Length: 281
Ligand SMILES: C[S@@+](CC[C@H](N)C(=O)[O-])C[C@H]1O[C@@H](n2cnc3c(N)ncnc32)[C@H](O)[C@@H]1O
Image (cartoon, rainbow, N blue to C red; front, side, top):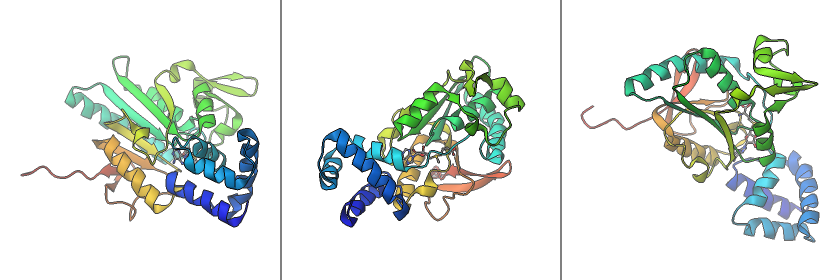
């Protein structure tokens, strides 16, 4: 792959997916594109560039992206934030009851292989706050179809538990051990769904308006400022006015967007929507 072709693909990935591709990714990109040439029966890298640019549905770009994005994730990641989420559940319940609503909607973006979404569901169950008459759904969105397939299977290896020992109560209670695999108990998968989407596009969030909690952790860190602004705009549209947005502990929206302001809630930074004040308020 020559410099011009690499720059074209790098520019496309940056504009459409938001990911900033460092030079070190060039060899991975070259290897993957070489494989795709075979599959697509194309002769040259130049042919591939023309093909990927003309693919309006962006399927080829998303497939390529899935090989260059970082899918790293694991259960109970960043415990301080999870504790804060656990504490907020009581507030959310009180707020919902005041409004006469039993609906709670939660998003995990990019959800990767599902550990974050299921961790939230485990915390919800452990809280004991919500019984059968609550309608709670957690939706994970990611660009990577392979990661989403694993998320839907909900079968994990030890690698997904690097923050907790496999002897931990939470692991023993919520997973069934089958040889070297940990199968999430099926009642914890029922209210969790996954779908493919590009977080920079509005379509990714269709039907998810009025979301109460968004986890968008360890995604923005790989993105350029324009992409972060686009995602912030999309999240502003999808979160309810009283909603809560968590970004990763090493990420920040300060100086990136004016749509959210940080608040310290239960010991961690949580972003809240800036909502225009009502006249006379
Ligand atoms: C490092 S993982 C984070 C997983 C999880 N949120 C966590 O914190 O453990 C980042 C995920 O974001 C996904 N991703 C990156 N860019 C994306 C985009 N534009 N749209 C949707 N998903 C994207 C990647 O495919 C990857 O699975």
